[in-house]
Length: 278
Ligand SMILES: [Ca+2]
Ligand SMILES: [Ca+2]
Ligand SMILES: [Ca+2]
Image (tube, rainbow, N blue to C red; front, side, top):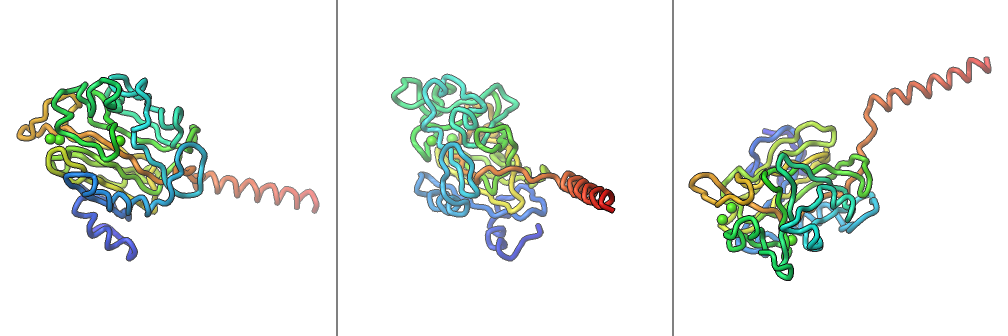
């Protein structure tokens, strides 16, 4: 049984229903799934409240949260075009940079663009098999089902950590395959957590908070590279992402060794001053 604090124990008891495996970290888990946005709205809003006010775009704040719903991404950076990996730390600074073992990222098209919505450009079957939580764009890696998210002070190259991370998914159908691998503020592993399944075309939400904070989140969305025909009986489950919600990225504390080195230098200087006075 993971070591848990009394304040978080109630939430963690629910959490273990979705643990793939878990380290001794204390994580609070918010989870929901269902056939439409209303089915997950309450859990999403509870997670937002746990993180605090939405800080929007740019700047740096002592607390609160950031959100990415993909819907404001211009056509230039939406399907069939790729989204730059640093779009949300450069074009629209919100402190996240993506990477993938695949070949890039896409945000799905909107109706006005003429490109098929909800990744119909990747496979004509996808629009009928998916929905949005926030209309009308979704997100995916290309040629991979894996997205790595690293955090930065928004608009800078300064590494950061966040108090929590959550995301909405559509069409999660195979249990324990769509999941997060989380890394804590000190870079150590914080375990894996599965996104709950829903009926075909449904919505799922998984939000995590941890007092040890997160430096990196790796998301596996379904089991298939986008473009594949979904065949659940062959364990081929296509899944896309919608809203990302995460704590305000804040600077990683100075490592203990550097603090000790700094303390030693101060003592050395103080002694030097005393020696010269003596
Ligand atoms: Ca959206
Ligand atoms: Ca699916
Ligand atoms: Ca499906």
